[in-house]
Image 1 (cartoon, rainbow, N blue to C red):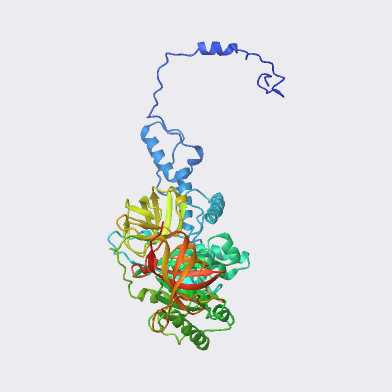
Image 2: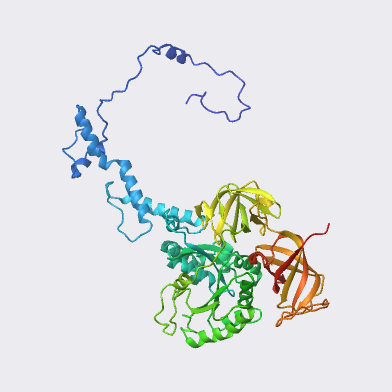
Length: 587
């Protein structure tokens, strides 16, 4: 080895010497022919055929005679190219890869071995590795299964009515499992994805949780088996397009549940028929009561009660147990304000097996009504005013190539490139793109759950509870308002100066009762002449409330969705109420 080519042990040893000039180079440069003719490729040259291809054509039934290694004429070269084509190395690999991708969905088909590429041995190994890589990639992605089914609508198809369904109920009643099962039955989650969830759940000894993983996508929710955020998914029936809002059942996450219920048109109260579980959910501290009441306050008019876990060994589709749950619930729901004849519908089901969700159950002869999904499809249409002012309460926001906000359009219609105003900060924004349930559209009607990409505002400047309006008709904002409130549950008395947390549409704000104006008689509706010094449980009063910051709100008479609220304190719902009058600020 030339000592000049070796690197020194340390750069300090090397003296700063100029590199020696190689004398050979000069003589070789001088010998270069600068005036040589330009290189012209010979297009009639014989095509190079590798030796291992020369067997191929004789095996191939379509090929002609054997190809000689050296062919003089141009025609012979062409035939060689033709005969080599079906067995070309690149092609054969492509076809096997393509066929493998297609087979990914149905692994039970024949193995794609011995294709045109030969015996197929090494390819199978590649494919297995490839599948593992694909699976790993799938796991890394956030698993929100989106099917092309929803996107591929013909342009002239009539728009299906959008209905938002919130699943509420006590913790572990089976809300997420029913949601996952519905998505599977309507084809929104592939069988393969569910099988993967099932494998992963089995590894954690949580076999029965796999369906809920379609909606509980983050790791914390999966590990504990408890929903925290409101899960979102969608499915379609013949007549309608449904958005599932999977609310958390745990009492620590009731604020999230209120946010979910405020976007819903219809609530599904899931109760467990299993011995002991129904009782826990329905007792005073249970969430069955609180959720039903909060759904009513959030403006849900129709309630479907799914009596889940009917396949449990302690129940075994027993009519007595079903009737027992029904008898306990009806008086309470009546008290909350639902009309048992019109607003409530009971049905038995099993979320884990999917019984009575899409198809009727043979073992349950006493239930003659429609199963759950057909029942949803048969509900009457909701009347929504699309010509009203634009009102879109913001539920959530994040950054993704701009500022993206989520929310349900309560009234009015929004189209692409429209100029809107963000209240209460009065920012003018422009709609860059509209996504309705992850499908891009140009305009949206009321009732749709939307993702909007906005221009002209930073993500930090938005808070949940802000409202998008059109500039001609802004929503009201302020801090002080008069409201009628019903005290539902409070141990002691409530006096002026009492602080609580106000939940109004998607907004959460601290509030103080500054004055009690009068008491209202529950039966006659008469107002007391004198100002009460305090109010206690089960009383109705009109009070003046003042929030810590400016919020957007409307009177209940003008716009019910933005005029009803709940007051919560110490993790309990204390009162529900409606806004009667907005009070102008005194400077």
